[in-house]
Structure formats: structure tokens, C-alpha cells
Image (cartoon, rainbow, N blue to C red):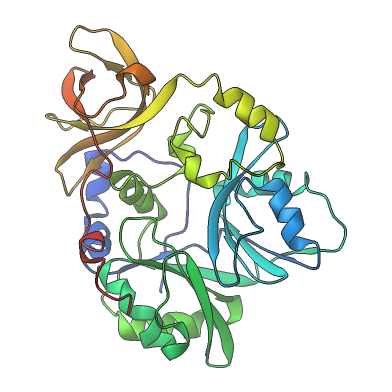
Length: 353
């Protein structure tokens, strides 16, 4: 990968901005594209107390996380305020944590709240590479590159295999609505790994990180920076699936559930009917009579739908599919998620490999 685009700061998803990566968008929606995630935080937590330590600071259930399974969950501060979302690759006494670069400081803050003595934390960020492949045709890549050791990989699971004497960890984590895989390996074998990927998918373009914000928006995937722009409560954003409500303890639990009882808004999907303008974060969502109903959390231009789409927060009493709304003078409607069915989702009966 000659010059893979790395994760950057949050950028606009206007029609003009999106047109600049039209080729990459089409690749992931119809074929396969590659993205450099080397800047992501990569941590290894190992030792006798590792599982209990992580279970105490994360909202998901680490006690039930099996070996070679992946858990997408989150961490809170002591008051129950969202800090970061984390992907945990489960082992027996060894766990790999992956977190986007923008949340690096927050994951360190989360780890500082844990308890236990018999565990070690190793920062792999500089020593390991992380490459993701997404798209309908990415389903064939792992086995083509690494063979039978990674065959039949189910969603939210991972496996390890050898390549040129190096251990490659492959995790199936689709966040774009398409088949998707993370390839994690020592940085010194990145050249060999990329060569193997390129040999099987020479047409795959290098994709900018911002593209994933758009892909996740279209399929109602989660993006912390865009979904929670003003520190909204995670349950307002529909992140119930990241929380084990039966866990008796985790950092920030009491504050989290106390605040949940005061939640009055709910995130919804909105499709605009006309115009090419993409609303800005915070734009007012109105009814037909100009009364305020809520505000836009994030928005972008969807090439697939050829219109602007939004995620917004509405008062719960108004958060219903079919509700007509107006944003910046343009009519729209609350719709169900996702905004459309992707090729990978329409072919779920197809084996992963």
C-alpha cells in the first residue's frame, strides 16, 4: 500500500467532499477497499487478573467473552459519562484492545480506573500494524491469503495464522454494513502482509478514514465523535447493545443508570427529500409548523441514495418512523435503520469464504 490514508480529524461529509472519494466509496460498496488503521491504539492486557480487570472497567460482559471472540463495548468515567468505545479480542488470559486514535487518551483514562495486580498492559501501537479490508468481496481475502486456519470465520470472531513466518490475527468486524476484516500483525511484516493482500485484490484502492464515517452513517453504525457530539447519553444513541444491564459493577455504573432515567431524546434516521445541502451538526429539526423537535447529530451525502441523510436526536414522543420533518428549509422524513440494505447484507446466506 503505497500511501494509505490514515485516520484524521472529523471532516465534513458534504456532497463535494464525498465526491472526492467516489472511487473508494464504490469499491467498498461493490468490491473491496483497504484502510490504514496503524494509528489506532492497540493494547495487550495479559495475566491472571486480566479478565476481571477489564470486566470491572467496561460496560460489556467480559466474563462471557470466549476465546477467539470479539466484543465491541465501551468505557465510562467515574461519573458514568462515555469515554470511548473499544473492541476487545478475547483470549484465556490475554486480551487485545483496539480503539480509534481520536480516543487514545480516553482509553488510558479508562484503564486507570481498574483494579487488580496480576496483569500487565503492553502498548502495541507502534510495534504492530492494523489494516482493514471492507466490501462484498473482502469475504474471500482471509482464506485466500492465510489458508484454512481462518476458514469459516463468523462475525465478531478472530483467528490466527502464519504468513512468511509471522503470526497474523484476522478479526471479522463489519462496521460498514459490508463484510469487513481487521488484519493485525507485527509492524515489521506489514510489507509481506500488504503484498499478500495486493496479490489477491490488486484493484482495491487505499481508502481515507473519513469514508468509514459515511459508510457507518448509511448503515447506522456507531461513530463516537459523530454520534455523541455534545456528550449525549449512550442510551439516547441506542447503544444498549454495548451494555450488560445485569452486571452488578463496572466503572461509572451508578451514574450511568441514574442519568439514563433522565433521558428524554432518542436518535433517529432522517432522509431529506430534496436539495443538495448537508445539514451541519446542531441544525434544528422542525415540524411542518416550524416547532422545534430536536437537532442533527451528524449528516452526510449518500451517493447510493443521492440525497442528504442525517442522524438526529428527537424528543422521544416524536421519534417515530414516518414523521415528516424540516431541516434548513428542506423537507425530510424519519426512516428506519439502516438507510438501505447493502450488498453484503443482501447476501448473508453466502458463506464467509
